[in-house]
Image (cartoon, rainbow, N blue to C red; front, side, top):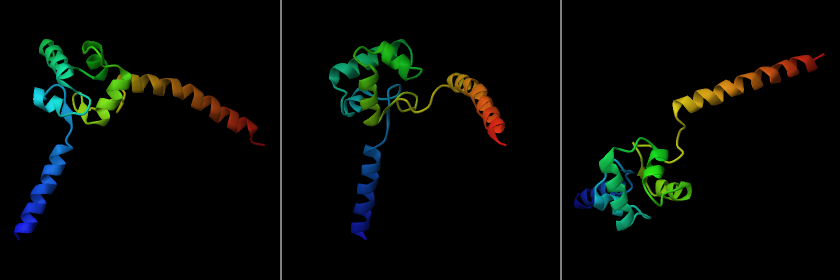
Amino acid sequence: MMKKIVAIAAMLFAVASWAAVDVNKATDAELDGVKGVGPALSKRIIEARKEAPFKDWPDFMTRVKGVKEKAATKLSAEGLTVNGQAFGAAPAPAQVAKSEAKAEPKKAAAGAAKAASKP
């Protein structure tokens, strides 16, 4: 019975260690725990966060010196999130609407070409 309790406790600890760290909620120590975030970067994150919470990854990358696309990709892979979102996880709704609007004419043209080619 004791072995089961220890095993369950170990599994819970392992799951907790893989949890995502949100830049808007994390403490200095939690940020330092993310591979790739050192004391200097965590200090810059906390200083920028004092002005206002980060809206999204582009806002985060703009306001925190030293974090560009390559670094954001690595940090996200290590569990860092902005408002619960991983870097490049999902485009904003406005961007999705624009890309769908552009796709509509292409689909219609492709459908018309297909119909015209049938005998």
